[in-house]
Length: 440
Image 1: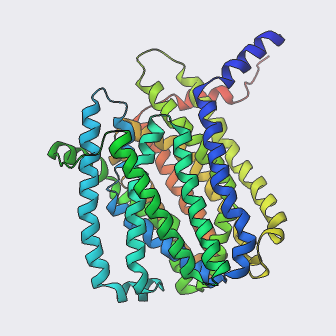
Image 2: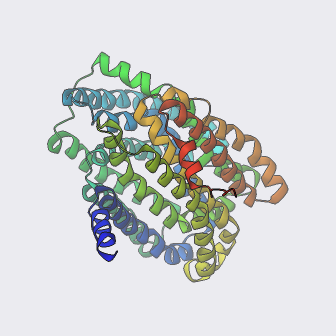
Image 3: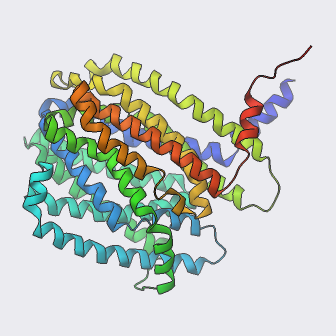
């Protein structure tokens, strides 16, 4: 009995999925430990209002990434598994050229309507150019990381993230602690770190992978449009779900409440770290298995994914209890109010993990049109309606509650889309997990 178990354990430990999961998890630990380790410092030199302004810049950055990135990341990862590598080169080159053109147009829009944006977001118009620069660098980074993930190169993937995190926080310490700058020090650190990472990623795309060229292919443009355009409502909905609550807090509550909300997100990031690491390792393994012409046990895969999905909310509650216990040891006294948001943030990350599990089937099938209205777009509508109501009824914590509710709605829509895009025996797997009633 011992020998077969040891053999199964050896096979499991040698599996690409587990090796990838440990690599991504280790990298996520490295990139997440630095922000958490510096929270005791930064929360004593910066005010909740400072944190709120930096969080608002992240809101604006992400909406720019939606449009500049033209939703190419999933298609690039999927096309890595196609039989014609030249198509990937054309696709990447076209995506980068298209994102550059969109970026120039958006920069002109920001310059023309900067004061209006400032009134709506409470973010200084003079710093909108910096947000634009960070967003463009993020798009370049995301393109490269999506290819590293598809190529099963977790060490290179996490090294890019770790260097960016190290630069960002190292420069932040210099500017905020040593030079006594406020939120502007954090912004300059973000700019410098993103510039370095974008250059590293451009080097990787151009020289290492030999994929980036100065070309624009109409066929590749049509592929990007067919894949990415149906996702625009979906991606905008995703932005609303993750970012709009901060804008509601800025206008209905205060920028300081936005800072507390953002710190709660940081404190629950270990759960997101675990979920993201597992998903990053799971994607290439899943895509490779779905692309295989050999027969394999689909019920067993579905059963495993159902069990993982059920365990995530339990893990979220444990994470929230642990964070609330150590909170006074991590942050300054002015940030103790972040504990009110922690449970809802942890549950949001857990639901997001379930979303990842099922959303990968939609990406693999390339039937992203199924996600247009039923997933993140619908979740975004729920947040836009629920967030001001819950803030009014429950105070600022209502923003976190609305975010969690929006993710639940989006995930349910994603599950239905996954079943239509790539049918799997989910019902048979669920039935096999239920206790069997014995008849006399």
